[in-house]
Image (cartoon, rainbow, N blue to C red):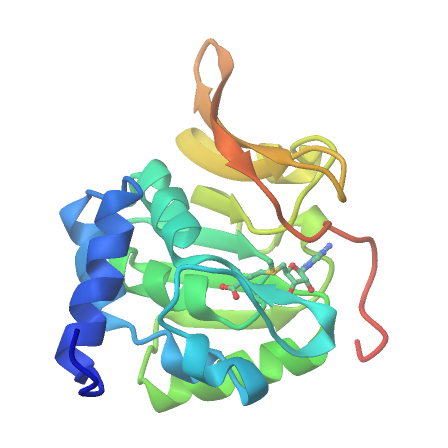
Length: 218
Ligand code: SAM
């Protein structure tokens, strides 16, 4: 074992290796995750743990998701470069930044004004010009911009929210953690087809809850 501090290149290699070993194998998703450094999205005390495959605390009592879960959710969405994507739960902005490398246009919404403001600053800094970040209650979606090719919810709902299902295009895919807020939830993939909604369970996950209304700072 060497005591030499790891270089950025080594850290990146380990980060990508951890993603692959957890099942993130889609080349476009791995490319996006290589291009977007998680470092700027983690501030304060936990900044030096940004490259570990774990969720970490962010402002407003929320969390930035585990990178492998970000990768698996992005992969499950099967996004093309023509797609318009809605993310509910901007949080740190990390997932939206990954989506911005895969999709034509990304709308992301969070109930905390502060999180949206901070995420926007990072998007500007990284020149990610195809993301629009909005403060609001994302359970109602964004009717003005609907329909969406893909929808990703990064907070746990008791059921896939009806307004979001309604705003999904025919042929579209939605990924959402479903279950009681403080228990293990199931990550569900919903495919909207001519013959109805097809549901499949992807894996167990643990997300903060999807809450009603705006945050205190909203
Ligand atoms: N995707 C984020 C990232 O990349 O950092 C992580 C999201 S965090 C696990 C969940 C987020 O959902 C929190 O920021 C929380 O404020 C937000 N949230 C919860 N309920 C919401 C709602 N009804 N509308 C919009 N955002 C909501």
